[in-house]
Image (cartoon, rainbow, N blue to C red; front, side, top):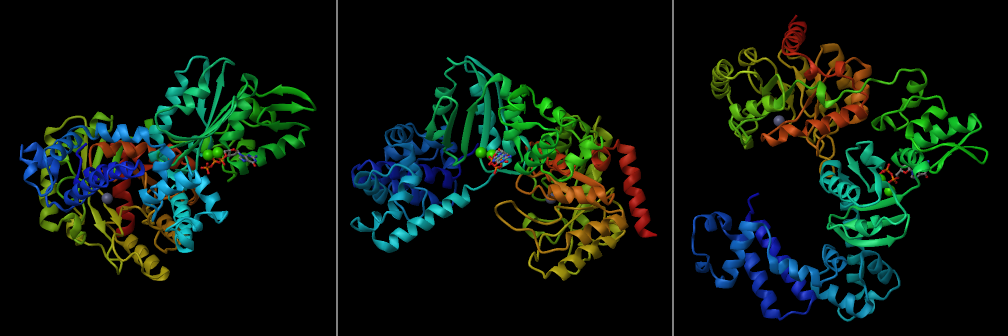
Length: 579
Ligand code: DGT
Ligand code: CA
Ligand code: CA
Ligand code: ZN
């Protein structure tokens, strides 16, 4: 991973913060801050200068020592001195620096005078009116601090599943490798594969003498231990994510897993069925009166109320209980069903790899086909293709298809839907494509009626195939544009248009409920990664997670089709609209 100037500068700023909390020499602190500022202002990456063997001491204010540190940072991604200082400062104090308007000087005072060690401590001190009495603080600062705490909490409110996943899996493996630990699973919204998680709920079976709680609270990513007990502990990770670990008895494991997987609404519905049968289900087991009749395995919980086991992704009380009762649970799609990716970018626009590299990467994943869908001209920021450049790309694809074995490159284009609903390229060139992904990239703020009409009109174009990222949302960053999605889904049903489930972890657009609605109306879905690099092709599994939450089966998803069936379908929908 290349360190950009901002990354390097951030490490120096962080070092300065830590030194300041420790009360280090102010000149030393200032030297690191100045270095950070200088690096941010440079027109070129210091990483490139280091790689080119340039003499960094020629930069203003950079001596031998700083030059050496910059070199270490760009080459190793970190700085030993920073790690050393981080060990000296309590991690929760460093966390306080994340609060806007709370610099190291103030953190130091709060810590030394009021003994503040954590966000909770600080909130308590503010509410007790202690902070305003500190020299240099006052009521205004106090209000700003309170707002800062709230902002920080909101920002850390829900983390993308894909962001939480690496550390969650590392932690799971760390616990599973602990002596005396028999089973470990991450329950909660994580197991239901919800697009964002509020916190992680881990369950384990461990022998009484197992050091599992110690291993948990000393895991390397832990910033702060909130509570520690023999059966339950809670920690906060450096990323702000809260994690609970519960150690349960083997005879309760299945019941606990079912309970903590949730959702709450699903649990309530299951427990209601139990009550009707004179049973009680809780996180400890299944009981008839005071007699335990099961609870070691999750299946038993469902069996006790005459239901088959229900996949976690469906457990939202959105009809899964009724479907399970009627023996009509969907046979959910899996990654193995996927035969190709229908939305991929190359170097010709804003992708990072050549068409050939993307195609080979897709073949390595076992795919039969990949559709190259570079941007059209309107998306100037991505150097979108005009007719001429698109035709050149199509010729390149023809040549590659002759040469490459084991993968077919489909000719596509991510065609911009203009403000009035026309497509960004003339029909004459669109007619040469196998498929189009038509997307909105500009004018997100049109009134609902206009935005909806724009998309409906685009769907009427005979060369419209797939509606790309249908609502434009970016999770935690940008709301969906104001659009009547219900009408769009109905129109897609009439027109035989396909809707995309964009698998980028921050998009996951369509949502789970929209997928469910599309399926009910017979609208087909394309699960696509919108890959801009060969690595992004692996986002597919987040799309699969979302599709499963949306009740989709292999037959609902077009990129499960063998190549010839897919091409037939594309031709057929086009023909239907052209008629
Ligand atoms: P999150 O953390 O907001 O992403 O969502 P969850 O679903 O992981 O929720 P969380 O962590 O508050 O609780 C984990 C599970 O525990 C939840 O899915 C169902 C169960 N649970 C929590 N509170 C209750 C409750 O009051 N009643 C019932 N029946 N179950 C509950
Ligand atoms: Ca949770
Ligand atoms: Ca929880
Ligand atoms: Zn795209």
